[in-house]
Length: 57
Ligand SMILES: [Zn+2]
Image 1: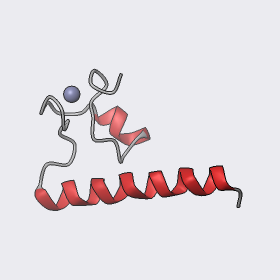
Image 2: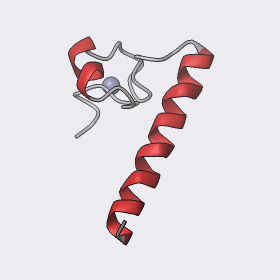
Image 3: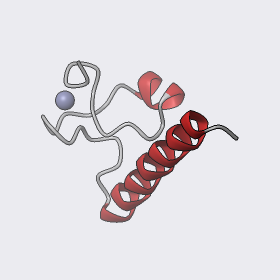
């Protein structure tokens, strides 16, 4: 595994841990910036994202 791959995996793992923490707090699927619900389609292809489409830019 090269360094970039390893770095990417670590970042992804951190995101997944963040998602799990949000599930535990009961606010999974809620944008961390604007507190709106994240589009379910977005969650389907980016399940660990903490932001909605508008806030992710
Ligand atoms: Zn948002």
